[in-house]
Length: 80
Image (tube, rainbow, N blue to C red; front, side, top):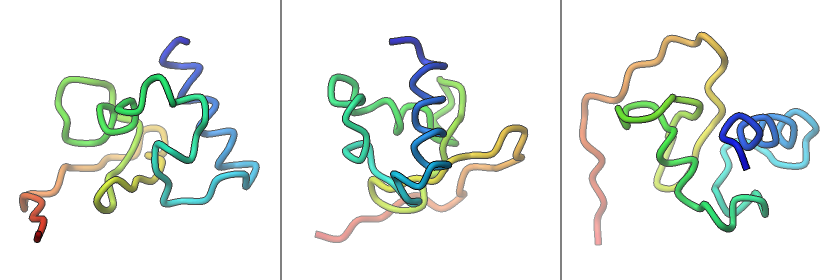
């Protein structure tokens, strides 16, 4: 499936209320064959078009079109 179709399906699911923000990749059955799609397209990755904002470990919100967002300056720290 094309990247733009996946993003549109995610937007539709959120706008219709089927999925609430923040969301995880596992909230979308159609991402089962591409579970890293959301993390790859999150703000700050640097390699891919940014569609999502990472708000926590494995959780994201939708980046609004033309929303200026900068990546966090502090590195993520995980305890454990």
